Each structure stands twice: as C-alpha cells, then as structure tokens.
Length: 151
Image 1 (cartoon, one colour):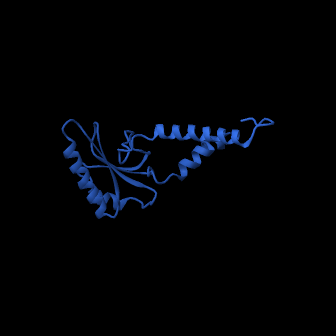
Image 2: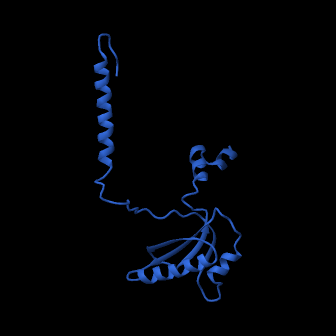
C-alpha cells in the first residue's frame, strides 16, 4: 500500500479491511466443514531406531521380565507393533492388548500400533515419543550437528 498525498484515512482503512477479508477467507477455506471431531491421520506412526527389540518366541523372556532388564530411561517409549494380514485384525489387537497389560504390570506405559502389514508382533524401546520434540526442534533449526563438526 502506498499512501499518496491527498488520500485520507478512509482509503487506508479500506485497504486494511480488504486484507483482513482475504486472510479470513483463506483460513475458512482450509478449515473444513466442522463436522469431524478429530482429524484422522493417515500417516505412519513416528518410529525411531530402536534401542532394544523384543519378540515373542520359544525361550524368550516374558515382556515384563525383558522390560525389567532394560536400563530405565524416561525419554524412551515402548511401542508394541502388531501387524496383521487379511482377517487377522482382531487377533492382532488381542495380542497387542495382552502385551500392553504385561507392560503396565511392569510399570511401563506402551504405545500400541495395530496396522495392516506383514511380520510379527514386536515391542521396541526407542526415542520416538512425539511429545519429546526438543531434539527434533534443535536439529531442524540448526542443521545436523555432526555435519557442523566435520566442517
């Protein structure tokens, strides 16, 4: 907006009103219809490189015993991943629920992910807690610290 000699405050106010209208219209066009209570995320759950992996197999310790043997770290999150094939969703959910209950008895809260796919049910400890964003924020704002060191 360029103010010219002879233009009054009405022109400035009209310009600002138009800008406000365009911003409001843009925000409303992206807001949706308001009927959905919570947006459904179709993105895969965040996963980091695991610190430790547990699989249920013959001779392996129970999940609670395995958790007790791990070094306690409040930053690590336990994730129980239960993939399932066609028609196996109920069984995968039941197994994941049983493992989450075992983890709760050991004093660990688990994130349970039941999704279509191949593989076996696993439990992992990793630094993939979505609430712990400090390291991601620092890395994204400063770049990779390892690359900075190597320069």
